[in-house]
Structures are given as structure tokens and as C-alpha cells.
Length: 298
Ligand SMILES: Cc1cc2nc3c(=O)[nH]c(=O)nc-3n(C[C@H](O)[C@H](O)[C@H](O)COP(=O)(O)OP(=O)(O)OC[C@H]3O[C@@H](n4cnc5c(N)ncnc54)[C@H](O)[C@@H]3O)c2cc1C
Image 1 (cartoon, helix red, strand yellow):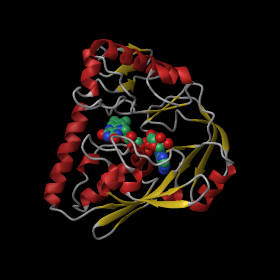
Image 2 (tube, protein in one colour):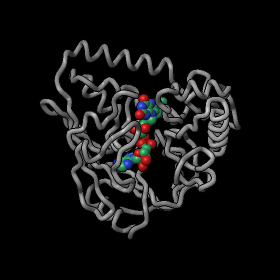
Image 3 (cartoon, helix red, strand yellow):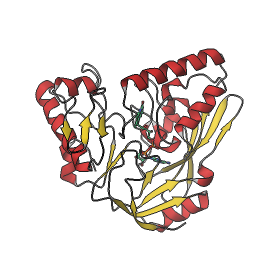
Image 4 (cartoon, rainbow, N blue to C red):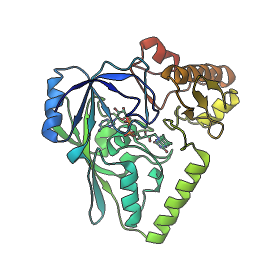
């Protein structure tokens, strides 16, 4: 395990935006992860999965950053469950259960990312999240101890859990009961078709920028539209015409462009309908005032 310095994060995030990580380590084994976490001596580190939900500041980030690979990237299908390492891709997991005709996984169709990132974000649809399928999840604490968590420990909610932010997910077992293969396949195809038709896959983005505020308000994209921000462009970033809750990198966008669109949208939505939107994406390396401008905590 080696800590590298000044590693460019624009190449490691889906947005293709952001400055370098001051310290970065790619770890392949549990002993290496323990070593990496213990070597930090209390400094808070972050974990990068596929970077499909992270916007990194143009100046980069000071917090040490870890990514998992090697032995953390595995999938094992069993009789009525599937075990996955945190570095396994969500598309690989979904592809495997779909091919094997296992039910209840279409909610995660066409969601980019890793299993670890999916657990942290409780990724999924507005009705179902990844933790709804979890039998157990193993996480490593900053002290290097491995803790087995159940759903009741994590208390998952919409795009969040109560698991401490500095714990690293390493593996999980999920339910994957056999179903009717044709029906399973049809449900996946339909979900994929709808997502690709209504969302933006051809340009770099982080998916939905804002959490849906919940009743009595509509979806976040409806509020952005009501505020007149659909299609707005700042620098190389645009609130997409197809989906008003996506901000795409049109090419050469800076993090400042995305942040400026977010801050203006949030202010205008509040003026129009009295709701303060809350970011769904993770913002790394930003100053306190920048985070406050888009309603994010450090
Ligand atoms: C086109 C598009 C469509 C999308 N559609 C959806 C959707 O339908 N539903 C949905 O929920 N999301 C969606 N997303 C967002 C994204 O796919 C999910 O949030 C996904 O879970 C991110 O996984 P990741 O590995 O890329 O995580 P990252 O972006 O790398 O990280 C996200 C968070 O997870 C943490 N993290 C990553 N790995 C670990 C780990 N091993 N242990 C602990 N914490 C970790 C990070 O520190 C960070 O806080 C979409 C994104 C795009 C670009």
C-alpha cells in the first residue's frame, strides 16, 4: 500500500471535473486497508468508488482518499442470495442477478457505481434502496476493526444511512431469490428503457443533483423547472433539457460552473415555491461558504 500525492481526480470521477487529491491510495486487500486507515492516525479520510456521485472542487481536496480494488472486486451467486465486494460494479451485480433470473433488482438497473458507493448512498429508486436487499454488510472502522451490520443498524433512508461517514464498506450479502426469468428480464428492460429515455447518459454527470423534497412538493426536477432553470448554462455546465435535475459537463466544465448553477437554482426555487433544495451529490474539497451556498454541510 502506497500513498500517492497529487492524483488527478478528474480522471477518476464520472463528471471528469476536479483538481487533485493531496493523498491517494488504491488498496487491494483487507490487511492493506487496515494499514492505510491506521496510518492516518485519526485524520478523516474519504472513499472513492466509481465517482458517479461526487463533484470535486477545482482546487482539489486535502483529505486523504482511498479506493478499493483487487480482492474487494468480486461477485458470488448462491442459492437465494448474492455476495459482493464493495469494489464490484452495481451494473455487474445487476447484470448477474438479471441473467440468473433472480427477482427484485430492477430498481438498480442503469445505476452506475460500485457496491460500496451504492451502500453509502442507499442507491436505487424513490421506493427501493440497496439496503432493502441487504442481509448483512461488512464495514471497516478507522481503527481497522470489521463490523457486520444489518439493515436495522444502518437505518437506511432516502439516499442516506446512519453508518458513520468514516467507516468503509468492504462486502455485503444481498437477497436474490429465484423468479420467473422472462418476467425478471422484462422488468429490467422496461426500467432501463425508461431511465435511458428520460435521463442523460451520453454526457458526464452525477445523476440527480438534488434530493426530491417529498410531499407535498413535487420532484426536484419539477421545482427546478418551475424556477425557470431548465437548460441554463454556466461555463461548460448545463442543466439538461431532457432532465432538469441533471447538470451535465458539456466539455471542459469547472466545478465552479456546476456550483454556480446549483446555488442559483436553489435560490430561485426558494423564491418560486419556498423550498430549500438539498444536494444528493457529494461535494468534496469545497470551502464552508461554497457548501452553504448549495445547502450542503461539510
Ligand atoms: C447517469 C446516472 C444515473 C444515476 N441514476 C441513479 C439512480 O437511479 N439512483 C441512485 O440512487 N443513484 C443514481 N446515480 C448516482 C450514482 O450512480 C449512485 O449514487 C452510486 O451509488 C454511486 O456509486 P459510486 O461507487 O460511484 O460512489 P462514489 O460517487 O464514488 O461515492 C459516493 C459516496 O459513497 C462513498 N463510498 C464509495 N465507496 C464506499 C465504500 N466502499 N465505503 C464507504 N463509502 C463509500 C463515497 O465516499 C461518497 O460519499 C446516477 C448517476 C448517474 C451518472
